[in-house]
Amino acid sequence: MANYDSIEYATYLLKHEKKQNKGEKGRDSERLKTYQAEWMFQRQVDCQNFKSIEEAQRCAKLIYKTKTWQKLWRESVDGNVLKILDATPAVVAMSNRNKTQSGFTNGRTVTLAVSGLNKYTLLHELAHCLGHMHHGRSFRQCLLKLVGVFMGAEEKNILKNEFKRKGLACGNARKPLSYDKWLEAKKRMEKIRK
Ligand SMILES: [Zn+2]
Image (cartoon, rainbow, N blue to C red):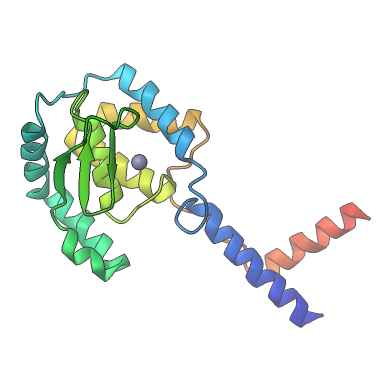
């Protein structure tokens, strides 16, 4: 019985970890809600528009020189040594045939739509490049840091608030229950079911 419980507890730990950062290991299930929060955010702030892809490239280059970028990039390397190659992601223009996306990235190159180019879209894609190839908690935390430094504290607060309104967690991940606490909770649940 103790053995069976420990297997069940291990399963609980895996599920808990997955829930803390959706998209990292499972389906990117918070993507749509993240987009919706971002649309609301962009309606409330004045975002720097880029007139050309060259202007976006210049902005990215300035970002790469900052301490904030260097720090976040080093953290991403701690999580995945391959990120050592991605200190300065290239920024390129999207083909005109793609009319549905404002930007996308493979983590190494950021591709931006030429119409409606703005700083926020660039920051969104750069947050992906920093080791968060999804829209879960760690992505949002990283994006909030970028927005706070490269757009402003007020902008960061507005975005954080929109994430909250959508029920998207941005704080630190919750710790799982200890084995004893988990066992207690499980017994309580079993009693309720009976
Ligand atoms: Zn994205």
